[in-house]
Amino acid sequence: MIGTEVSVILPVAVEVAESLFRRLSSTPIGEAVRAVRWELANKGNSPALAYTAYSLADLHVTNCP
Image 1 (tube, rainbow, N blue to C red):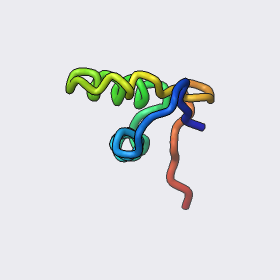
Image 2 (cartoon, rainbow, N blue to C red; image 1 turned 180 degrees about the vertical axis):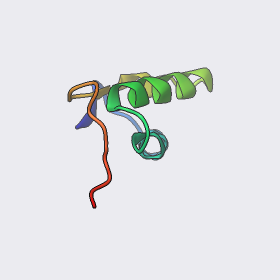
Image 3 (cartoon, rainbow, N blue to C red; image 1 turned 135 degrees about the vertical axis):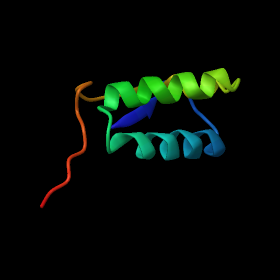
């Protein structure tokens, strides 16, 4: 589960979700969240820093046959 510590506006939530989904096929969730937070923070989007992964940091998506 991905959540925030504060309320965020929908455009920020959409941008975070899209960036996370792009990364999850090749990156564990902890690294993906960190990368998204830095990416958006570097663009001046500080509400993105509020996102937290409530799971094991090395959780990742695998392809099932």
